[in-house]
Amino acid sequence: MKGVLTGALALLCQISAAQPLLAQTAPAAVALTGGRVIASPDASPVDATVVIEGGNIVAVGARGRVTVPAGATTIDCTGLFVVAGFQNSHVHFTEEKWADAKTQPAATLAAQLEAMLTRYGFTTAVDTASWLPNTVELRWRSEIEAPGPRILTAGLALYPPNGVPYYVKDAVPPQLLKLLPQPSTPADAIDAVRRNVEGGANLIKLFTGSWVSRGQVVMMPADVAAAAVDDAHRRSRLVFAHPSNVAGLEVALAAHVDVLAHVVEAGEGLTPNHLKRMKSQDMALVPTLKLLADDGAGGVRALLDQVRDFAKVGGQILFGTDVGYLSDYNPSREYVLMEAAGLTWRQILASLTTNPAARFKESSRRGRVARGMEADIVVLGTDPALGANAFTDVRYVIRAGRMIYRRQEAQ
Image (cartoon, rainbow, N blue to C red; front, side, top):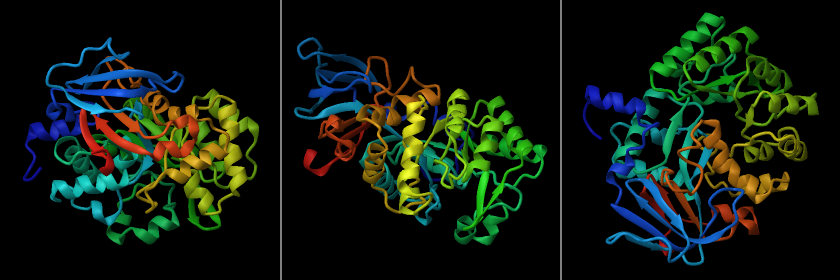
């Protein structure tokens, strides 16, 4: 999209994340035939045909019992496995290549989105901190002319007073650094939330504990965190938090944050009761195990045990990799580490599909391969029951009824 947005387009830019527009350019009908459909994480694989029209799934049924519309585009999925589209619940659009998203060629943006997300099956991506005006432009273009995932963004994260992390200070230009919200009062926090939401943010991100140096974590004041969460909830926005240590987790718990954006990397003092409190408050967890395990934070076994124990008490886990901060986009190690933490393939599939749909209150729209759902679909070449690496064997990705990725040999 080039030129200046009209008022109507600007309004659509604000709502595009909630109302998929790719369906407007989708084929009249698409049929996935011959595949094994895993309709949801708790469903058994069945031989079925999936029919898509107008960006939605209109039929799922046994071979011979579903009529494929005349003229439909047919994709032969023999020997393949059909599941719902994946959500990566922790990404960032902060790399230099995303700058000037409004004017970059659509083909360039589409290729970048494919390399980072769509080739791995991600039909929804949650950006947990970036420069909001630019990400809003990227979100719009991904919907209209640079096919990619649905993008949900937090805009600028909120940090403790004088609490911008050292690794952000090292990466952000000074002129942008001074714009990062560091509210010191509840009123400041409410104002920062308001500015993000009015700018188009879908969620809010807090650093309830922030690594200001490699050995020091600064906490967000409890009343500031509580004010931010209360106002975000009033505006129907979820709140993610980076806890860093147990004290940061305590701030997040007291404020009733919705999602932890990482496991607690400095886990000294973490007890089973903390995990039970998270569960009782319906707080979800995005582990980002690859990021923290490869960084040596807290010891790999302790990180895996956090995820294992949280899952055992019934905690909701969302898949996320922190790509954009991490330059290695391949999620395979994250899947392997989740498996090493004791998660079954069904639990991993839930973290990619039904769990994020439920967390964002969209279970009636996405997360399952079923009639009436939006046609966000991934076709895998390997049975996920055989191991976590199957989730990276992505052959086709369909978003809102439109093919946005096909692996070369699958063409």
